[in-house]
Length: 178
Image (tube, rainbow, N blue to C red; front, side):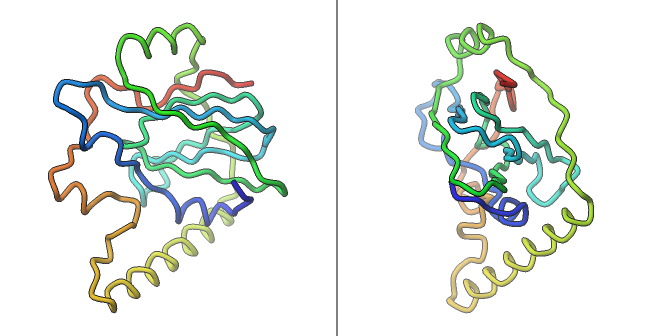
């Protein structure tokens, strides 16, 4: 991933479409992120509600950080203020007893305190992301397209019957602080 700004990360918040086509009765797909490079100032931005910063959790991404996230339920993006690209291995897993055992074996940290970010910088980032979203929606509307298409919310897919509720799936497990 190339370096970006907090405003870029907020603009890029999205949910993944991991489960819409799963056969009935199968596990819920979650994603694991394994940070390969040492980026102590980079962080995964997670939100329960896309446009509500009060729901935000920021997960630091130093070398060796391992995070398992329900990326269909949580809005997510990475803020990487570094000067070089960062590298991360992203894999998908089916929830169930096997995954629970694997997570438990790695001594998970279920909650973390979000690193501090400057409030003025954050407010400027929210305004920049909102302006970029509005400009994108206007262009799509001019083209006769639904402005929600590709906005990261999966609103169109959910309108097609996609169920984004995940029974018995933890929202986030941080497996390592290293």
